[in-house]
Length: 415
Image (cartoon, rainbow, N blue to C red):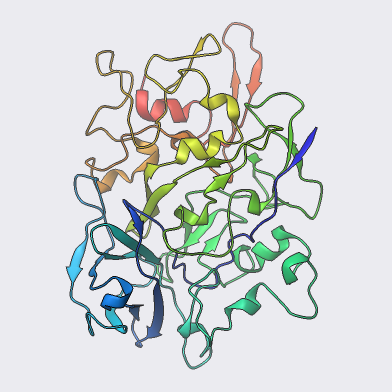
């Protein structure tokens, strides 16, 4: 039976800067927070606004961060006092460095809103609308022009009044190789780090159709047939897989990382939705390297919503068994399962080379093996073609690996 994932929301279309809301350690949603950007000539001034009045549950505390603590336990929050504290017009101004990721937290200890900002280049004089709301996925005010980035009222080519007939074409309006509207080029798997550094490899890899050199990827190009089988699910099960299978288009308060959907439908016939709290954050310590991602929870659960078999049995525990075959353990939530006595897996304080810039230090949160430790989320240019020593038979199995052949294994185990 063919199963079609429901199209509820549109995929990520970023114009310039990403300013996404996500929950990191949140107990409940705090106040609505919105961000505005102003070009000050040499950089960008970021203004964070919220209703801090008692009628709205205030006053709230405010903090910002652009890096993590040395322990890797949390973001390195810097507490600040906003202007107009305790009123409906609280605001904090922060001069920021372009192409560095920033996080803003408004909280009363129980309720919290975390807003993300990824400021980029823009010019007020040539694009006066853009500086007012440089984000196409939410955070809208009455004067925004961002709705028109994706929708048109009377001449839509797709449902929901979308400007393009397919989700793939719509997303690539901003996230394609030929577009300059976002610092994220998902088509070829790159992220822009400013004019001095240029484009570097992204965290997710390439996903474009017809891009030279891609060896394995999720097929989301719905300009053609996107019925696909799912590795790790039952034979004969198929998904209609597009950009919106994983991502939603309209942001809110405390969204999942990268606007990943909170309700994920697995590849079965019962439509048993899984609620996934995918919490992670990306920082830029070295622009020549690009972004580093810190996974907190939800990575493995999100992938296993469709790749069902990888979340069955006890294989997610150290020494666990998967279909009567031993399998490499992965995290469950933010818990790291380790077999320290045998030394097979990273212990506290260890780090995994595939997820960390070696120059960034080893005391961070990346001592947990998750799906994206070994695999790209979108696609890869890497290949796995190994000749067996006894038979000479060549085994080819790309599976979106982060390194060629057994490089993924050797990066940690170094045998």
